[in-house]
Image (cartoon, rainbow, N blue to C red; front, side, top):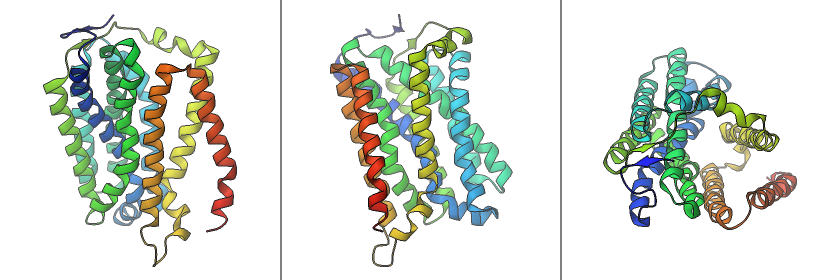
Length: 302
């Protein structure tokens, strides 16, 4: 059982106020993860590395986040979620400031690892806090709201990052650091104390021995690997669609992608509360498979 300073089944309006700063935090994490993709040419040019090497900044961030999330969740499990989020956001903000000030590629790569460590804790702590505070019948929607920050960053983070980065790519990282600081202020002001039972690392990793959990993990890994691979270099992939008469094609493609992700996230949140997870998962994977199968037909017309 979770322990909070307010009743576990707080009023809906109060729960939403507490969840919004969590959504801002995940929005900052998502923006930080995705925005580098739009800044690759500028970063590569200033740091004197190839675009491919600059793209590894995204890969290192993603891999660090994936590996660190379960380990940091275990190490910080005895800390209440509000303090854990405050600590993680501080690391996240510092990491982005160091990234913005990086004079060379090795320092920037190290800064991305530091930032990812904070991001991993933010995502895990925000998710656990959301489920702990929400009543059982609203947990799907609570998770959708918090994780919606990540998906919304796909629609808005990249275009806004490009807009700011057109002046100076370092300003984009300062803006992301500002988002992290804003989330920290909101969490300090509105999130109640949320304590969850401490679980050792063996118990935390035990679900990986379950076939159904491992299957979901593999499917999620493949989906996210495909997502990051395409998203990181989508500017180069879609270069033919960007012409003098249609200079903002990439921005519109990314915005449409983000709108789809945001819509799917919130629809899934409502469906999971009303339908079985298996049905929702099969429907999503089935739809995605069909769309991927026919996508080459459209790309061939470019």
